[in-house]
Length: 286
Length: 352
Image (tube, rainbow over all chains, first blue to last red; front, side, top):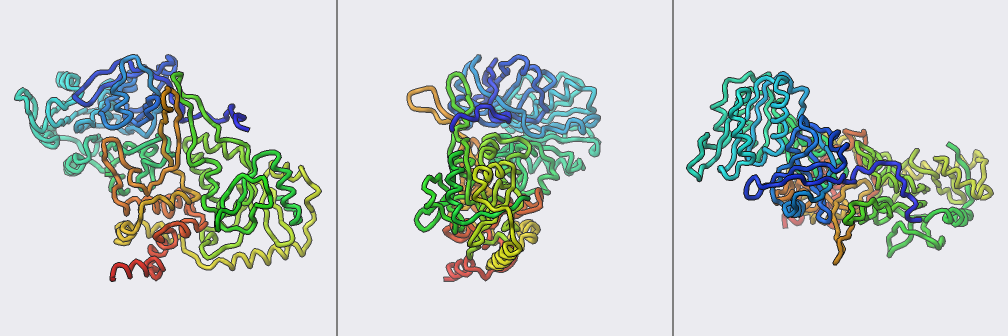
């Protein structure tokens, strides 16, 4: 009786949508930038998402993995990803040339609460590869600048060569409607013109804030959270206005495979954006 | 609900008639245990079984199956695991297990691989008698009111047949002469007596309503470290649990060619690599942390979402875990009743 059920009543949420790598280049030694377009033009243009959401990218034969979307929905048509070499799927992706076909499905996850963030001050705190998800919300705020009050970026990288989106973020320093502070832990080039020190040293450069009307967005390596959150809590920013986006293993992205379970929630459905209150309230988040 | 009678001698002839419509799965002997298997020889069907080794979810989501055929052209859906089936001999606790999986696989996103298989399988339940490991009365899953097409209550000389769906009624209509529409007062009394005796046959119980709070309060209790030390991280508890749903996905390329399959297979949160992300970071490297996740899901999380535990009291984890870590020992330890075989043995080993 095999083959009788070709006509399914359900859409298949596991089916990847064919997409094309439009552009790809190295951001650092082991991080690559990917610009991707869904092959079906109509779908490519109507594809909508929120900053902070993610998608599953699949490479035929290698499998699929979750990646934050680094582009902003305010610039539709192309999706951008910033991908570090880490496993089977990323190794396969790194070998792929421009114009290669990949699979894409999404968007998944909750994303940042943009509606709540409107008419508020926004501080974006980035450590290293944390720029991948936070670039989306940063560009969204800048593209819709009149919807937000102060926007600040505090960016930290280990050393100048490991800073991703270097030209882009340096260019942002020219904008008068953005407070942009860049730092490296160590300058091994002797040519770094900005702050030197871990990302928390940038807080002293920040102008006085209005904590109750501030949303702080944090993403970076696990070690960073503890120190950054301490600063933010000391600044009196409410715990449910401190937002962070977390990484977990995912095989499905749609709350079925179980791998991203934390306590009693699924990162792929209820995250990846969590508040500091969630972290205190639930177990195992960071 | 329509309830009719079936004479005992008519059961196997009836199964034979309906098995012409679809593959009939039923419990058969495997060593001294039982398994669900496709049967064509009806004399092999076992009516007086307790739990099967694996829960019936293997019939809907096989341990390994293909989701997509992969070729240069892309992904082609593969639903070859979905065939017409009739599942006979499933006990109330296992039907509750399927209802739990239904909730899960219908929530937020529909999982077509499970739901299509479910839609193509008729459920013919069968009453059972508890052994010393069953505790379905504690989870209130010893009785069943939904989730079946037909349900057979075994009353020695005859079966009461509860018709739970229109499709179930269609099955009856294939051989109406096997059935008797008239229930006598005596039949009903026989049922009442059976039900009372069956309910009294449960030998122990556990207070599940107390467990969510205790999971919270005892989250940092040293008990978890002790359990973690004893746990073999073999994944057996997950393998046999009727409500476990976790899986992994991988692309499998065939040798020499460009074709392949996207494979989905059972996974277990108790295995070390379960929470490992690319690059090697592992969020649950400790066995104690993985056990906490399993028991949080079974005894706490599902209750907060659906008002009942995602444990159906089948006793499979009790008969399966090689080191006696199961819902009974963990539940009782959370409740402070440590005079259990597991703890007696464990304490002895430590003080020795």
